[in-house]
Image 1: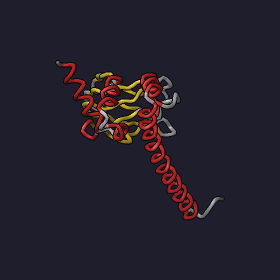
Image 2: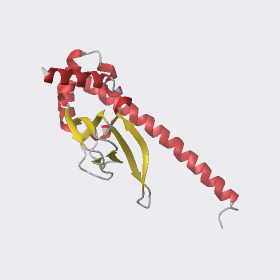
Image 3: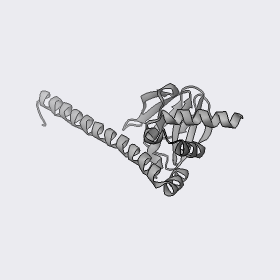
Length: 174
């Protein structure tokens, strides 16, 4: 009976995650997707993902706890980009479901945490067997990445404009 409760709890949380919004009402798909995820626990202070790691192949959904997303400056100094908590229905590492490149940030547990973890090979196998659902989830990942790219483009233009303004204020290039 405990396994049934765990599966039900997992399905309910997955339904709140934007990646699965288009299939949240499809009981069969949600049951199958939930079974692809394993539950993994980390302690406060543990590193879940390390920036630059090339072995990353998993999506993480925060079941319980809080994490910090950390990036490094050009000089290698770490800074916290965001703090994410379970109650926000947050996930990270979704790019790893599609791409084998290096991890783009470090994720550290600020508290003891539990995660639902989906490995790339399970996602790809599921998508091959259920291409319609796989496509819907992949489209949502693409949508998220497009939004991030657009925001990055705006940020780059803003930084460039600020640099040009600063150079002009300083009297131009010498």
